[in-house]
Length: 245
Image (tube, rainbow, N blue to C red; front, side):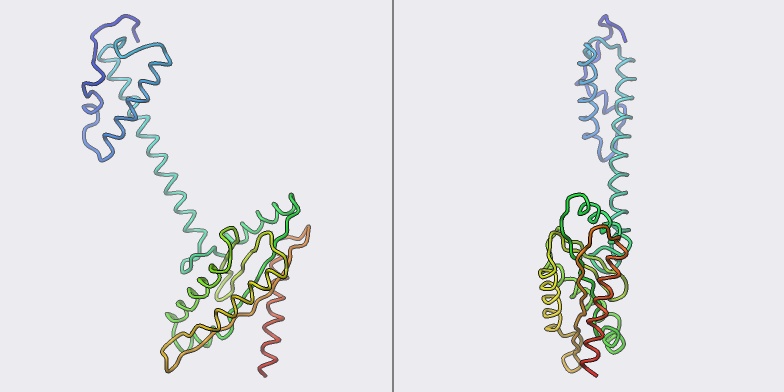
């Protein structure tokens, strides 16, 4: 670049627009290029008047290419975030899938290890779901699953974690909660679900849910934590089956 003014090219003459005509984001890109070029020149102690037309043309081209690359990176990052979100969530329900739930569970346990906070897990399995699926069809079964997730979300906080662990099994991680609070939430899930009917009125079916509650113990792995809550759930389910027999 030259320190002596020569062949002044007015920056407001629309030079950038001539370099890259067309394109939906053209005006926005041109504004960003102008801002970047002005910042660069000011930091270097130059002005547009110090540039020849060729120098200005080359510099604007480089700045435009830089801006295009930045916008491409932003677009790719947004697409990557969307792909991660899709990969983390159940394909049917607005909750974590098992893999993502286990990952987030491990993060929360690490937090609890560090700060000594409490966390409870409610592990759930729907009662009579197979019979409902067999009798009323999978579309009604899908509707029942969606309804149950709506019940869960009604009673948990945004900071709590909800995951579908497979089939009709779900888990809820309640942060900064005691066992009594977790058991109360489990009762809400069951009470609300039993009030719902699925299918036609003349052949409607109801569901219930068996819930197991576990309080995380210091040093416990996520896998063992899940196992204890799962076992507590099966104990409740066996007691229900025994009572019905």
